[in-house]
Amino acid sequence: MFSGIVETTGKIVALKYEQSNLHITIKAPFTHELKIDQSIAHNGVCLTVVNINDDTYTVTAIAETLQKTNLSHLKLNDSINLERCMKLGDRLDGHIVQGHVDQTAICKNIKETNGSWMFTFEYEPAHNNVTVEKGSICINGVSVTVVGSQFNSFSVCIIPYTFEHTNFQNVHVGTIVNLEFDIIGKYISKLVLKN
Picture 1: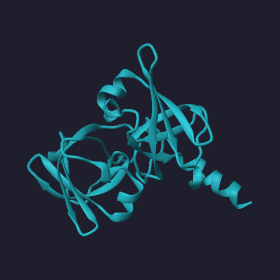
Picture 2: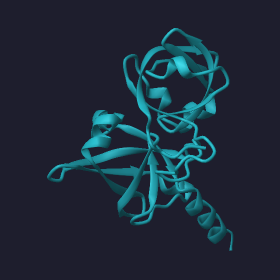
Picture 3: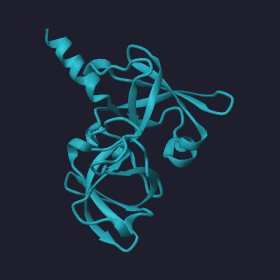
């Protein structure tokens, strides 16, 4: 389990396809603390460490993960948001995040708002995912609060600290991002649609 509080960003140093799998090698400040089999969220996608070499480590994304996330769009030297899984007893500073991306969205607008930025994202509504005003959503692994909720789009405000310490600084109009909708909202939505 994760909290959506990005610990650091890493740098993509190698991308290697093997059949339908993608091996992603990342240079990260905390690599020396990692161990094989450890779970880490990469742009909000929970992946397992399969190899460690000096200051880099490798994870593998399978075809289904590549189809549902933005990991297939990664390029060498890209910045990726990283969060190690929570320890039992830690504070939950963000919200409950599973590391299971529901779908992607496209950035449609970025507006500077006197010291912060408002990002608007649009997503395919066929999956019946919903947002609510003042509710939580995870974008590229970052827990944020929804400030504008529409049928298939929403907006969030990003403060300077988050902008500077995550890859939000690399998000532009047209950028594809990963979304994990609030788990409680997903259960409620499923129950309502069932009845």
